[in-house]
Image (tube, rainbow, N blue to C red; front, side):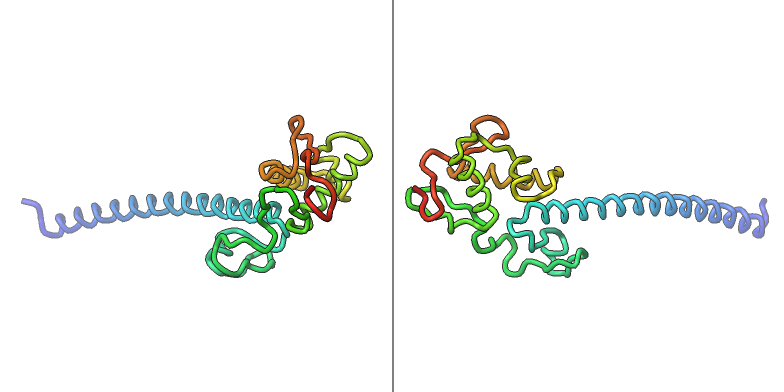
Length: 181
């Protein structure tokens, strides 16, 4: 028959092994958690930067900090009002005869003006890289893609025509700054 002390030592040894196994598992889980948290932070930063690039006025941050009502880490102001509420002139209306360019934000008006000038000079369609150069922007992918997004939105609303992939012109009846026709 085993002694009481021997049984206690055996149980202590078993408990010690269990504690060591649990610590190893906790360390492994903590390492996985650290990796996942770093990855999550990278996605938050990427989402914030995409929001900055695609924001019509560039003065609002879209991301978890903005939706939670917390100050953004980039130091830019957080969009106020209900989530998803559009800023004035940030929504591109469908083109209709008589609709003035003033219904659009300044960025969209600049695109239309560049295309109107190009059309007036009979130079044909304009690419987004050429637009970036016209506006004095560096032709880096972020700036070009922001312009492409805006141009595609104008195509979808009837203000522009994409005659060939990536080449934009004014729609047939869209002319002049004062009115849409």
